[in-house]
Length: 497
Image (cartoon, rainbow, N blue to C red; front, side):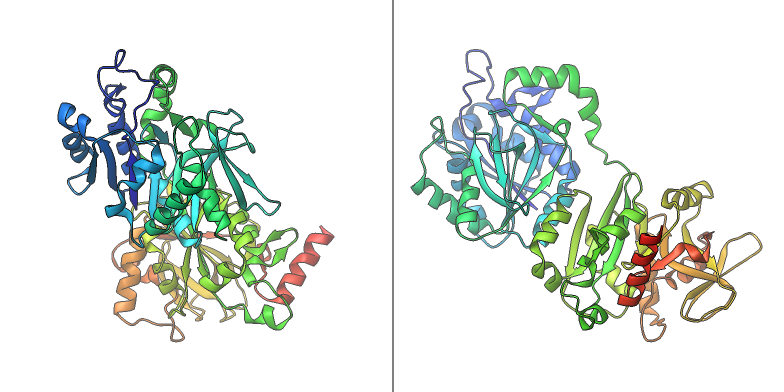
């Protein structure tokens, strides 16, 4: 993702007679402020590349251009300006040669830290097909900019230094295309007056609304936003917040839950359902929300592989899901050759070394998902399969055969090699294990019913010496909701409970 950081304005809160160095080079916790800001972004979005607008005076006197290339990489762009501008919008537009294109653009303040997975945020905004996006946090102080939403949660207005709601903007502005920002910013300058002598970024979002565009948001906690807008805030960070925010660097271990939901859902449409299958109401929530809540564990993050036309058909539902802050959409617009292939399309959203769980999008299981994962960790398994005993050995299931130590020796799709039938929830200690073994399976053209399923991937891990286990539940704990009949049965069960 491309990040533009405009730092070419003078800040009266950091006067020259009190602070010898320009604001970006003022030390915070022993390092220049801009180094702390850039380092925080790079740790949360390894794909980050940077464009800076700076004052030529700061380049000549303090080697700011060299400093930026050292902290942001030689490939960063540094645009030198002869004079201070009238605010972030003007500074950003001075980088027009580097942003006036069709690539996504994020504009960030140069004096803040956002404790969030910025790579995930940018990915969520991009895949939502929204025209713009902002990160928000709860506040009612007039020092910030704010958004206002309509009844359906759509952003319909923004304001600078004027409280419209409890949602303040955290100095993070996403635009689907750089050229779109350029056009809207120019229109904003022609229409509006400066606020306190400066042109801020938030009013540009009003141009998105006026042009019929869509703005999405990603909410964070107030304590996840750290601003160095004043010397006092720097002092507070160093004395109080440093111990909490400094370890921001390594991201917390996250269980990545991939849910393919890219089927056509034809049986539901034939039965008269209007919404796409994942967004059908199930007792007051969408089907996919019910499935996610069923699988939720601490530090979980969901990757939902959805049909692009389904997302486009329900923008309000998509926005509502994104506001949860724990998911990213990975859209596709083609039919794959099986579930394993479908999951592979989302690999760009996965941490290769993080744990991975793959689950069906249309079933509810009465079980403790945390216990399932903890069992795999305690037993030091490389993978684990949720199973139940099927005395009938119905070939509609996948099956696993274990040895006397309880490790899986073989799995078969639609072939009863034992009475251990699989539920459709699969754990891998590392996402890269699934990715590599899936590629091996596809390269071997190892299909089941002419498709590449997820379960047979374990055969390729087992051949490498990986330890694969099973975790048993009762057959009655499973509730399919993938057909209109199954859904009616489940809803009836809920009413009778």
